[in-house]
Image (tube, rainbow, N blue to C red; front, side, top):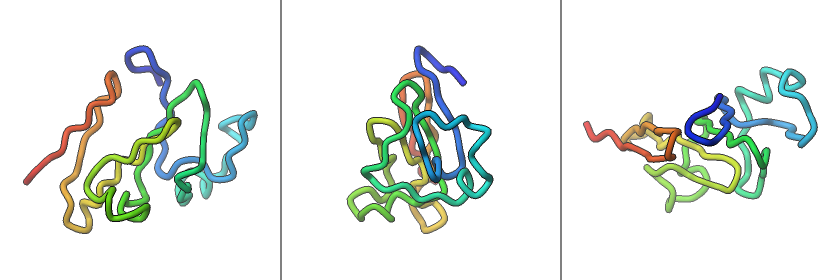
Length: 101
């Protein structure tokens, strides 16, 4: 999908078994639903990937309750199920909006 001047890939959990030339239809449901990328994982250079599934606190307490942004992907699971505020991400400018109940 496109928003603003960027292309995006929205998945539940990033891309398991990522390979730069691998077509999207070659990824399994498992790759799209249950992956937990590491902070050093890098996806496409021209398509930005956005996902949830892994609460950002998994990467360290310094990320708890905030969007985790890398060069090629963003994890937007702020941990609302664990008491953190949920967030929305406006793709056109990558502006996060945190919802405080």
